Length: 553
Image (cartoon, rainbow, N blue to C red; front, side, top):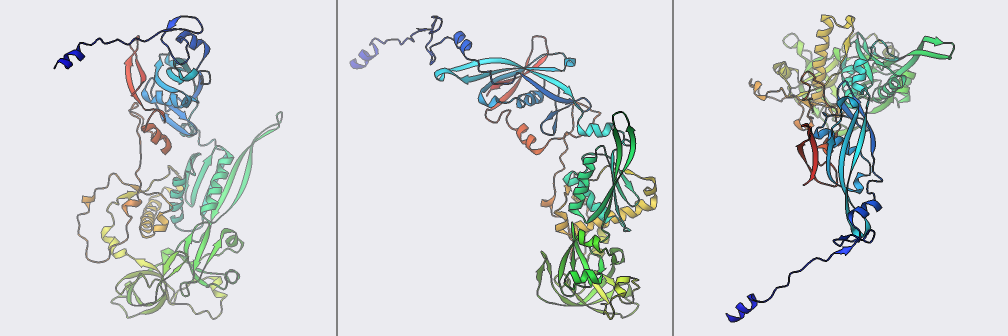
C-alpha cells in the first residue's frame, strides 16, 4: 500500500517539442524533414509544375453533352458532380500527386470557360509532404456529336449511296443483314436509310463511310458490286470537282435451305458434288450439302460469281409431310453440324384422306425425325422445274422428295400471336412509297414472323446477332394450356441481353439515349480516381450558388 502511494506521488516530467530555425530565412519553426518553413519550401518547390493548367473540352450544344475521348458523349449539367468528375478525368499526370480537394469556381455560363480549383499533396525534399492549391481553366468548344450531325444533315445532300439489292421474292436476307448491321454498328455514319421495293439504300456524307459498309457486307454475305460517280459541280479556277458516288451491291440469290442443281462445271470443280444439293449456311461463302451422301463443299463469292446459278426450288415451295416410319443410321458430324442418314416413309399432309401416296425417302434428318413428326421438304415427284442446268444431266434419277428440316407448324399455330420474351432492334428507315402498300406490309409481316421462327430453331444463327429481353413481356399472359407433345424450339433466357437505356433527366422533352460505352460506365460508377477513394460533398459559395467539392474519405 505504501509503495503504491509512493509511485503515485513521484514527479512526472512533461515532454516538450523543440523548435529549430529555418535553414533559408532563420524563422523559428517546428522541425520537419526539409528543415525549411512552409513559405521557403513553397518558394523552392512547385508541385504543380508538371500538371495541366489549361484544357480544351468539346461540347455538343444540341444534346448538351461533353466528349469523353475517344468517342463517348457524357451528359452533365453545370457545376454538377458528373461534370466535376469529367473535368478531373481529363487532366493528365494527376496520378503523380495526391488529390485532397476539388471544387468549381463560378464563371459566367456564356463565357465558355470552366474553372476548377484543386488542392493536392506531394512528397518533396527528404520526405516532407507539401500541400498546394491551383486553378485549372477549361475552354469549352462547340462541336456537334455524330448523332446530332446526322439529325441536322439534309438527307438530300448525300455524297455517297450504297444500293443493296437481292433478286429474290422474299426479305429473309435483309432481315438477317439488318441485325448484323445493328450489332456491329455498320450504319453508324449513315445520314439516311431508305427501304426500297427490292432492297435498301444507305446514304452517307462521305465516300469512305460507304466503302466501309461495302467492305462489311463483303465479309458477311456473298456479294458483287460496282461503283459509279456523277459530276455535280466543277470550279475551273481552283480545279476542284464535286462528285456523287453510287455503289451498286448485289447479294447472291442463293439462300439458306434452297435446293440447288449445280452446273456441271461447278459440280466438277467441287469434286463431282451433287448435282442436287442443299444450301445449309450462308456467310461470305456458301455451304453446300449433298443430302444423299453427306458430302459437302464451301463455295466462296468469287467462285459463285464466276459461274453463277439459281436455286431450283426455294423455301416458299416447301411442302409439309407426315413421317410414317424411320430407319436411322448412327449420327455423324459434318461441317460442325450433326446429321444421321435414314430411310424414311412420308406422306403429304394434304393427301391425308384423299389418296394413299407414300414416298420412300433417304434423308439426312434421321437424328431429328420420329414416326408421327412433321417435316418440310421439296416435292420433286412430277414437278415442273424448268431448269436448264437440270436438263443438261442426261439420265439423272431425281428423288421423289428431298426433306429439308423438321416442322413445328402444327404446334406453332396454337402459339402464334402470343408475345415472345425477347425482341430485336430495327434500323430507322424511310419507306419508299412503292414499298409502302398494304399488300407489301402484310407480306413483310408474314416473312418477319418466319424469320423469328428460324431464329428460335437455329442456335448458330442466333449467335451472330443480338437478342434483347422484352421488358413488356408478361409470362402470365400465356395461360392457355399446351397439348401434350414436343414443344417447338425457343430462345434460352441466358442468350438474351439487357437493353440498356439511360434517359436524360434534366430535359423532360428529350428522349435521346445517353451514349456511354461499357468502360466508362464501370469507371464512372466507381471512384473518381482509380488510385484514391473520394466522396462527393456539396457546399454553398459566397454568392449563394452551389459548388461541388472533393474531400478525402
